[in-house]
Image (cartoon, rainbow, N blue to C red):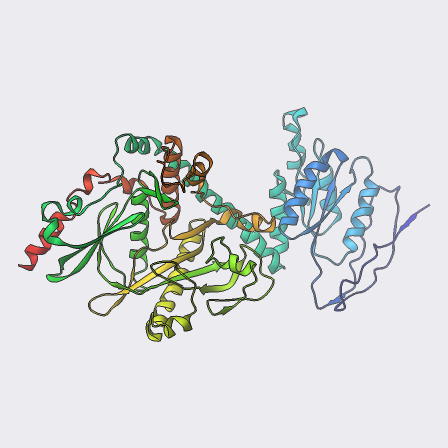
Length: 556
């Protein structure tokens, strides 16, 4: 006796979606031939029906393989269903299941999972008009030769063959994305993440090759740790240098020089290899100063179309020659994400209940590490004791800057950050937040000064895993530089200044150096080899002497 199959019940998804009922169709289970269920007459919906990917397998042993496909589809925002229906053993059951799916007014791509003698994908493709992806699991029994049953199909039978589970899911998603912008966005994000991972992996690989150079610099004490005016200017330092300041990492030497035949105040900035924490020097990291200095130079040269800056030249990988400017006592902190753990960080304040921060009203419901709707400026003061967050209104009212100067610098800061994010994204990175400093030179021109988008002044995340880790409520992936600091907290009391610090382990020093090199190559897209030319403390000696002499001669 013939059996009757009724269409699957359809649920009313929302008040704006109405689907017409589908008639029952007679199916003969005993016949090898099959009957197609008519398409639904019409569907009136203000919301397009959600796509569906039925994953059909030949036996329960294929379930783990199929779940990998389902997981990959879920990550792309696509619903799937797993079914077991062998084309060899229960062909009539397979056709019945397919007729039920074909009756659903939803965009579909079928995925067939069957190995050995794969009849499933061919029968499936003949029975439906939707696309079919064949993804047979590998079998050791025939050393992979059973794959030919999936490759060779009769004429008029055209399932797509993809062997990797995630690849099968991606193929289905690409097909469905032709009519679904949300899926297209997910596919774009996945492919971008895959490309971004290659940037990271390549930088990881190439930076490993420099371990010998790193160890050699450390062993030969060629790091740039202590500086002096004599180191930079030789015997003429007393007559040239007018002021010097030592920072935690960077030392500054002000002097009178000549540029284009004109005498003017200049500044030599030496970015050392010192690694600072707990208000102490933990170690000297080979090439760290060169990485920071050359990274800043890369960005200064790349952003001249946005705002003038103080850079003149880089006579040594650790040294920058710059125009001397009078700094504004404000740091322009620009953020694209809500994160951080310090007292001035946006997330720390937001999680403590602050909603109006630096004059910006933030809505409820934000979560840590999410991208903000737009980039924001959260300025801080530069004061002798403690920096503090401050609003633009307070900056003007307290006399730190005029409204005109603040507006100019704020506009340039946002444009610099937007440009930095764009370049970082091209190299597989997310520029999360950073700080900018501005000053006015003797001609009255406001210039970008100090540093820009370096690994120490900016927060970078790896783009490849950001979305996945955010969904899993994990901290974003980054090139971690905190492990040396943590070693000291675990092996001594670094705050006890009455005791000398233990020596940092060589392997940790070398690894931190490698990570700085990796960041340089990721951020700039350049080669670390460029940093090794003329590097080392020996080559710092008199690096500005000849330059200053040439300027003086030109002036005469």
